[in-house]
Picture 1 (cartoon, helix red, strand yellow):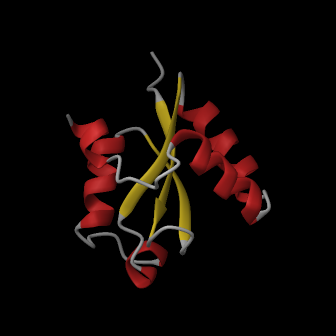
Picture 2 (tube, helix red, strand yellow):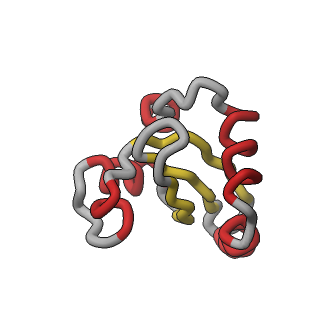
Length: 97
């Protein structure tokens, strides 16, 4: 059976730097970003707040969606965040609880 996948957006602050990623274990991956355990973009730019995520039935579907979203204009990404999370709250507790 295929694993489910998640596309997610981490942010440095409201309307700040954003990062789009994909994973099979959202809680673990977000925790790694928050703790600075992942070298690269999110650590460099302080993207530690989970502001948006989307669940997919397979990791392959999530990867396809991530690639689409990475091509979007920034305004489209911000609109997607604000549709789900208008106050840019940290959704970490939601996925871990």
